[in-house]
Amino acid sequence: MPPNDPIIDYIRELLAPLGAISARRMFGGYGIYHDGVMIGLVADGALFLKTDEETRQQFAAADCRPFVVENKGRTIQMSYWSAPEEAMDSAAAMTPWARLAYAAALRKANAKPAPKARKR
Image 1: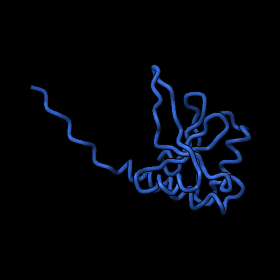
Image 2 (image 1 turned 60 degrees about the vertical axis):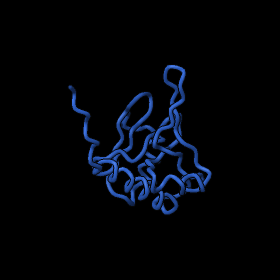
Image 3 (image 1 turned 90 degrees about the vertical axis):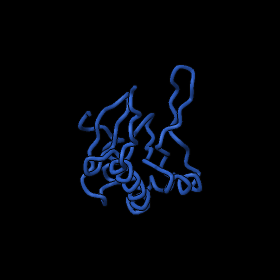
Image 4 (image 1 turned 45 degrees about the vertical axis):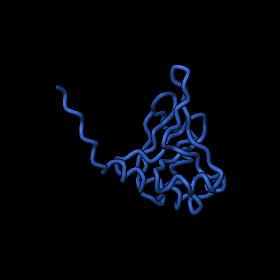
């Protein structure tokens, strides 16, 4: 990651109340990490935060949009949703959304993997 990328510097400021935030280059954007778990990503200059079944409706109600990728002619919706516009204005406005993203990321990280089917 370039050390002086303005968007990443700004996102670190917004997420500072959570604690240490790191960013790693990935697929032309950045993964955003807190305590070793990915809580967000930056693509095309926009911040997308981790969601799950417990939090997705809150993001939808705030007029956020899912991050989608095109792969082999298919559109795939990822578990990251754009941050609410007003949350991009201050750390105080972003903190509740960042906490939702962190909680969703922890649930995902701590989920037991589904048992694999046995080969016969």
